[in-house]
Image 1 (spheres, rainbow, N blue to C red):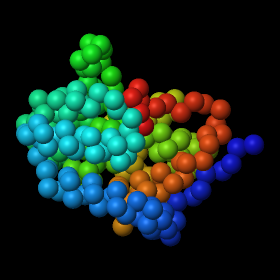
Image 2 (image 1 turned 135 degrees about the vertical axis):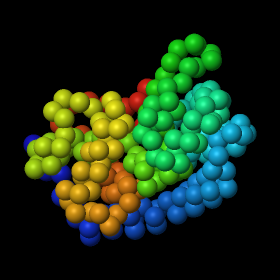
Image 3 (image 1 turned 45 degrees about the horizontal axis):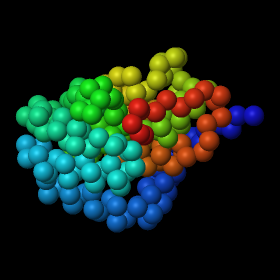
Length: 206
């Protein structure tokens, strides 16, 4: 029997934020200081440091961190310009990486959303398997009108941003940032998926 998803309220989002902040205080402070100190992506060592720290502390399970950092650094001008204005297209450019050891392309979608979010949290909501799981559970609720019937939420980041904006408006959560709402979605998506549909995760981690 499927369990109905928790209906978002301002009180529940606030409670989720407080719990998340208590449990992850040092991690969040460390990443905040790191990304604040090195906001640009034009210096390769700083990019590598941000990639390694985010990968480890947010458990994105990327093994080819050098390739990921190099990909960002080589596009530094485009990346920094896009991050400053909140352009969603840059997520795909950061996500798609050619692995030097194999020559194959991998898509680190979740990592890319998190990397962009830490640079500009007001513009880049985070996607990962927990967020995906919870949002898909809303297909049996009135919010379903905002969700595509068969698409995964990671196919087009611009569409994911739209859905997150609609989510915030629909549930009257306009006083919360994307990052605060993510803490609620992350907490709600922790439960096992009961939809009998596999959760689609990125190839190298969620």
